[in-house]
Length: 537
Image (cartoon, rainbow, N blue to C red):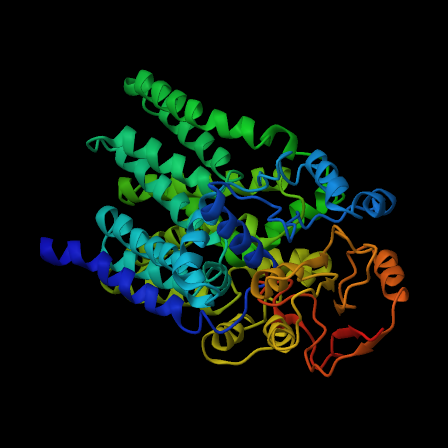
């Protein structure tokens, strides 16, 4: 391959990946988490910072805590009492500036909103670009250090990782975090390989990663620091200075976002978090059997190329460190907390497959490598030992499948099929009937209504203004949502007469949720219609 072709190939990968991620990406309406990003992004562009209160609607953390009923009921009756309560709880700062997430994704969503309004494809486009960039960077990093063939294998493994694909199509921080996690990994390699301005590029890229995801970088940076200080003592001072500069850059945000107090106790037991995240990482990031094979490659395979062994060792250390960190830091075993490291899982898979081919089938190394990679993509075989051991407790988190990965059907539906979209149905129904002074009561998926309809919306998990003096004219209730303070909603409905609207939308908890445990494909259809009510008195 000529030098010019090798420089162009990552751009080809980027173009193909963007086209792949874009198929049907604007078909479904934003769901709760995406709408929160879009609302805060719109506020960011308008005010220079993301404000949870825009004078009409309030964005809160989706944080239901048992035993809060009395406090929620008292505090949420007006905006004057709600803001101090939620600020003390840590949802946002006293002036309602959002501190629950870093602001990078809000900037992307805000700019996209300025360009395309509520068009879902435009809103998701910056995040699609981030996902495509991750695939192109994965190819470039492996092609340079291992070879073009394993680079293509890694790209295909990642591109057909169904739930990485689904997360990358969200108007949410997932794709940028995945892209910059990989970029930080690659920039660290460049620095330690002696690239020009290597340390400066590493610091800059790691700093940008933190602007999208302030939960993930710490474990990876700890691995990099240990590697730099323990295995290359000739540049110890440079390493210390580099990490000191990066720490100084992180410190203001650590203090502003009050990260020390975000590691608060959770109602989810440690065993559930540990087992659940291990189950999900094994299914969708890196099967533990391949992790064991990677470890064997690093420790025992002396015939393997030294760059490959180092690449695999570092990637494996980051994946395992991030999994251990997220068990401690995450409140619940959601795939979103570890999916950012699926590119490193694909890198490890491709390298292990390629080295297995070189070792056991040297004349047909590519055939064996393709076979191993295809099994990783299409079959739960490599994930089966751990998933079967844990399935009694965690099978509800995802559906692994027996011979073929169950989620491949989800991929086909995401690309070409039609799926229930209750948020779009509700928005289109209400849009033609709302009056200027209308308010909507919604127990969940309240933020999409606020984003699309631009009217005051009450409710949500926090129960904001559910029991305001004047009953809301409209109510949209999902009986399948159990994690709200239902007595407050029942009292609100009892204060006025309501008539059911003629809307045929399924009562499922959410719309375009990307998590395997919550994806619409896990719902046993048909289900009852959700409750849409109009006040008649």
